[in-house]
Amino acid sequence: MLGKVREELHAFAGVLEKNISLRNFLFAPEPGRTAQKLAVEKAFADRFSVVFFNFLQVLIDKRRQALINEIMAAFEE
Image 1 (cartoon, rainbow, N blue to C red):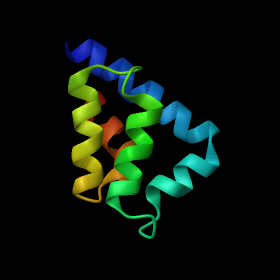
Image 2 (image 1 turned 90 degrees about the vertical axis):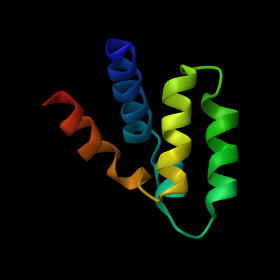
Image 3 (image 1 turned 60 degrees about the vertical axis):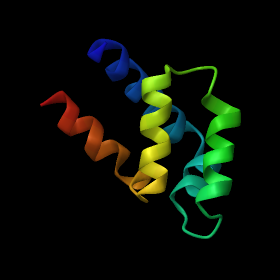
């Protein structure tokens, strides 16, 4: 299970690295959590496991999505 989450975390971080518009949208406070969660759901709900998708939703709820790289680094420790 942890191996799959690690892979999904790297995949998501890679998407954010390549898609600056998405990254800016998700990291900005203005669109609001609801809009950000809907965007993540439309883009990724069928691409990631339920566990990882729920993790992304919690990050948005807690306004921690900008910490994805730090979270990934901590996960690797």
